[in-house]
Image 1: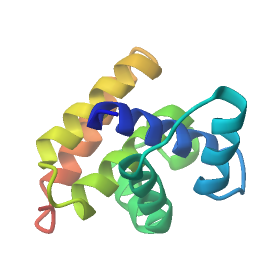
Image 2 (image 1 turned 135 degrees about the horizontal axis):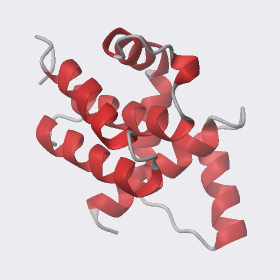
Image 3 (image 1 turned 180 degrees about the vertical axis):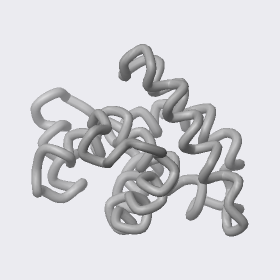
Length: 133
């Protein structure tokens, strides 16, 4: 599985997590059974890491989503941004620009017409913080 495919799987896991209280591992296991979906360690680590840091990630997204409350964001855009923010702040071997670009590409595929530019703007604001790698 390529890194891009792993990110897409991590996004799907986070998106599904927004509908259920189950763990990421449970969601992946159910997806594997229902859709013959195979996971990998990178996708699992991204999704689990985002869930573990959810409170901090959501605070950053809210802070940089000017005039948009978390409740107004689509689950697709929110899941994509959660994944990207986790990768930007806690996955040192991936450049921030790659995390942002991959998030924008996911938003183009799965989001509405406006999601990709919104995701890009929010993540760009977060990337300009002093503590971003």
